[in-house]
Length: 111
Length: 113
Image: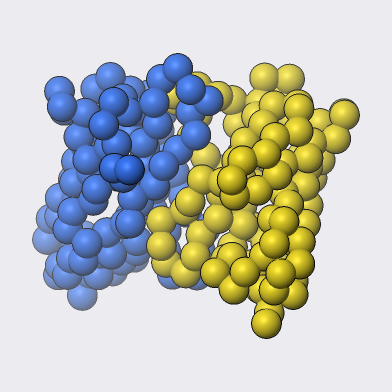
């Protein structure tokens, strides 16, 4: 699985957009980008994933660069409940695809 | 919507005892994954099963074993417990035919004294 690099921490004002970057320069052609978040000691929560096209769901948007070497998770209107550790994970989309959690980004949403 | 169920939620054991953690995947999910998260650490993959067969293996100690049953639930068996086994243990499940995004349960907090 490709290694990812994320900033260790970020702050965001409540109601503003939170943009969380992730570098995955060694990503392979068949590997997807997945984003999860973990709110203190709870089970990680799936947010969104993509292969090469930008994706949007009810929680967030995922922007993947054309060369696929980096991506950005966007929370359009951050709330205090979005304070969590955010993990960017790159892996193949198979039933044996374990998720390798690296050092994620601690996002703190401030009032 | 139904989520992954893990039991028990909390477990306290003494050194050298055994423990069994259970995981019930989301209905129609056929793959189960186990992760261990020590204090202040990121989740670490232990093992996964697809259709009752082991599909991948991570840094799971030889003292641990796991299996998936015909109803797709899974059990993680831990023997000769050590203090360092104290951690949160998460189970996740995914469904074939999708992009294999994993849905995690609430975890079992194991404390070894």
